[in-house]
Image (cartoon, rainbow, N blue to C red; front, side, top):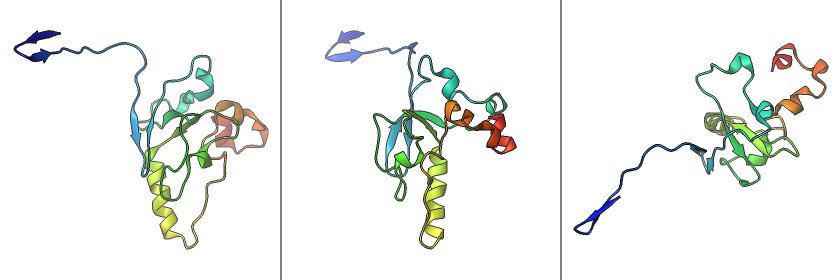
Length: 134
């Protein structure tokens, strides 16, 4: 940093450490978080999906609540008792558009929007073949 003639010149370099992104949902902005230490396997992408071009970001729902769109609340997508969720902004936009097209609307079954690995492993034998791969 340099100060001369009442002007401050600052040079900022890229820094290591935690980096986040702001995700803009229809009625809220959420800050994504990195994978929590010790829980990487719980929220990591399945091997078969790691090369996807669009990946939903991870959010800490203990610090966020309320509406993410006109018709949907954040807690509708969260598995009960879980702190983190992966949610794609485009999915929420599309659900909102679809809601307007269906007379009487619809709802997201709580806990079905995002299921972490531990929830997916519950009763795995009763799940659809494709769900067993995740």
